[in-house]
Length: 165
Image (tube, rainbow, N blue to C red; front, side, top):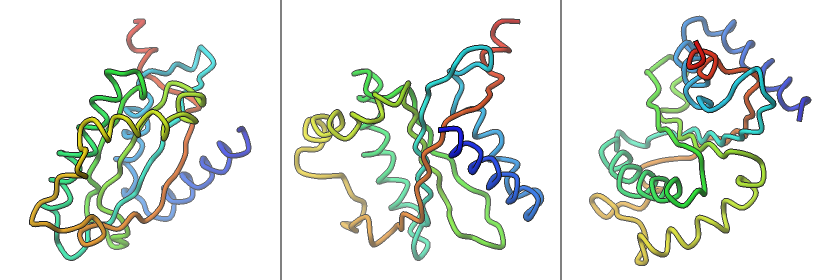
């Protein structure tokens, strides 16, 4: 676990130095994504970050898809204690332009994460038995590309420290 955190930290520092100003929003994102954590206690939170590139300017289709499917599934997953929280953030355009959205799903611990696929399956069947809702009948591969996925675990978070004061 610590080896992966060290690699993630090095990757983050490298990109902050290589692309000044580009990841300032990402630093805020990390704090918000792990808002249920504290440096004073052992943290077992696990988050999955999906980096998505919108294809051919089909932003409306992508946002419709995520609002009417991805978000709906996660709202139900929170109610059923399948996940702790979620967030979809939009990246500001930059010269690399390698992703447009970051989808974050936060699990309270590795056990909750390990069971996520099994726990999401009934939610998807319950809420969308005929498959996801789509805008303009475009399939997801027509309007978005999943660029990469990162599994991250927080090292520190200021949110609980601020609540105690």
